[in-house]
Image (cartoon, rainbow, N blue to C red):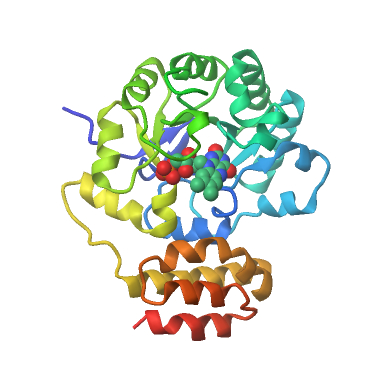
Length: 324
Ligand SMILES: Cc1cc2nc3c(=O)[nH]c(=O)nc-3n(C[C@H](O)[C@H](O)[C@H](O)COP(=O)(O)O)c2cc1C
């Protein structure tokens, strides 16, 4: 019997209802957004990356990023850093915070992160990556996972090697972004490289990059990935996971109407206000408003007006026109 493309997954003893994950996105995948994605069908959600150094030094903002809320489903807390002891300490903080998994960021291309030796820089240093992972694995009971890219430069396929290093260090799963670090988040993914990594790994590999619908997810699953992680398509539509699940099972679920999307945005604003307070919650939603209003009449003006809102009531007054 062939394995169904959509299926439950167990990662290091943690059961996920399906193999569709929300990819970590700094400035976006906070608790409020994770609740929407879990409600929208994601089997696993991942936090924004949190600095292991900041956790070590007791930075309040970073500790707040470890706050998990009811309704998120299984959550992976993603940490970044380059020092094995500091990363092991961060893993313990993630475990205490209630994370189901702790994920290592070994793919971030941002210069500031790479200069500190973390993120994608770890792809150049497989021994250090292995050391970080094994120290973390020994320090916590929850499974440790890792996210990296196919390579640093175009034409480079580091995935199979890094997958073996991760597996030997005791990692329970890998998320593989199919674009090289120099490409940041644009351009096509390298499906051949992803297939080679999935074949080399004895642990589940979540393919990631450019998935917007069931056809995109199917391509990665058919290349041998055990699961799929979705980033930006979920920002535009947090229910994309249910849509992909329906498509993979041979059914169909229509995309949400504009009105439904804006109503979801209002729900996000409410959740954000519950976490950060109204004014700060609205300020934190500014990054998302462009995605949510895209293509609607008068979107540019509404987005501009959104930037100076201070209360939920004002937000509702501005957006209600789009919810009918
Ligand atoms: C705004 C933004 C923030 C991101 N932040 C993170 C992060 O904190 N950790 C991480 O591993 N990847 C991060 N990524 C990369 C995504 O997890 C994902 O690999 C990438 O967006 C490709 O997937 P997509 O094409 O489905 O968006 C970020 C991407 C974006 C667009």
